[in-house]
Amino acid sequence: MLVSLFDKTLDNIKPICLPFSTALKSHKPSYYIRTGWLARSSSSVLYRSFPSSIESVGCQDAYNDQDVPLEKTYGQICIRRDNPYSGACTFNMAATPLQSVQLVGPSERYVLYGLLSFGPKQCLETYPDVYTAISPYVDWIVSNLKP
Image 1 (cartoon, rainbow, N blue to C red):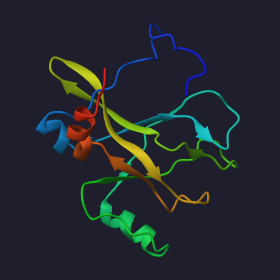
Image 2: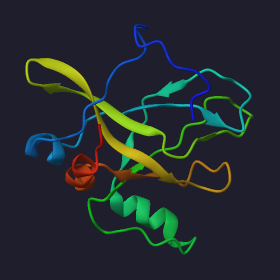
Image 3: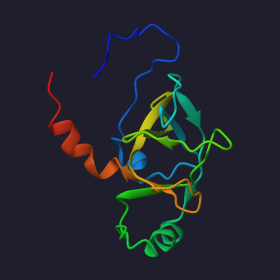
């Protein structure tokens, strides 16, 4: 819940697109942008990083020893963890957006590709963060939008 209304005229406030087209739904970006607040951090500043993805097999291998079954579909995106503050244990907040800048029509736009679902319970970089992919849910999202 927002404490107050935000100022949409600020340069760092931008709309985000859903991956509507078949091309965007099937596209695997070469890079992602993760923007959000960090849990276990007293900072009120948004943290932005450019994490790399991990192939689903490597992600499944990492979680197999924790008895966490991962879907063997395109419904999840595994992202390498990064720790912005050396020596401090921080986590991305739940539902942190995973986005990429893509060409949509004649201009570049931010496109939402995933929302943080879960990650490791401890500060171990051996376990990636797992995002729920947005593209399988675009039709459902659009049909449930209300004015």
